[in-house]
Length: 338
Image (cartoon, rainbow, N blue to C red; front, side, top):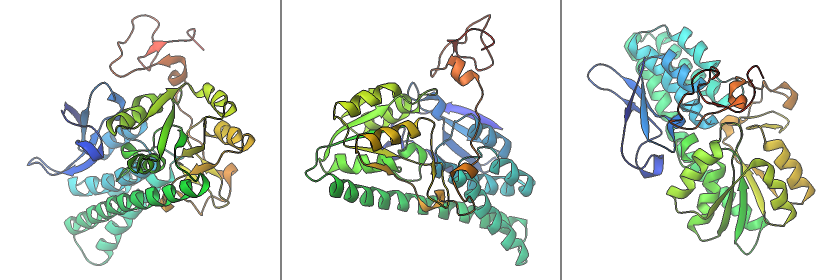
């Protein structure tokens, strides 16, 4: 079961409302998420009391971003265990909620392994549940530490590739504190450059069709006082042609054993543009995103999203139109039946 309630405050991990947190009110443990579907219009927390609610939050992108999904998945196993639900069933449902993001499965399996190990060692249900929670908290901490290291390594690489500073960086989708236990992946690198005065401009792709760039990356850039500009995805080529892009920074949903990267749709055209214009193209991801069990890019399962995400435009708090509106509840931009 999930409940929502509004919060005031800053809205991302580094400035107020945590993106994800474990809470234990008198009525029982809960997992509390910053509902990213409602950003940037309002900062609302979503309270999940069981695994099905968390699965729904994951599928509908209330919580998203590969590293954060791993953390959420681990906490979801602990939530099921501590609430007395069937742990194996909950773990299976969580693991399959977003198939491309390997971190989700990694987090679920880690907490489930801790739960199983505690039972195998003679622990009772409560002790096994606590072991799962410890595993989730450790993963949360490790991801925050990994985020800080990625920021340092990424900034050093940028400075090596682009001596002199004044970096003009283009990014796609959202890779900041909203996807991480820390300050993010690719966005964290840009933020590190900003903090030392070496970020001249952050180019933010809108990221069709769900506008994670416009709604979320721009939100985080504004909160951190960064110099940023929002562009439609199909305007990126013009920026490259004009010599306005020094580097591209993106995250990843899964990295195969051969180094192939799956990321938010629209990433591949940027890679081609960067190659053509001799611009560094950098993928920033934690080791938990590398999947040695997936041999190559063709073996990566690519998630297929509902069609209404393309045939409708859904903005935060957008009114639901009468007659003709499809299942998504957004504003139709294509003929009915498309």
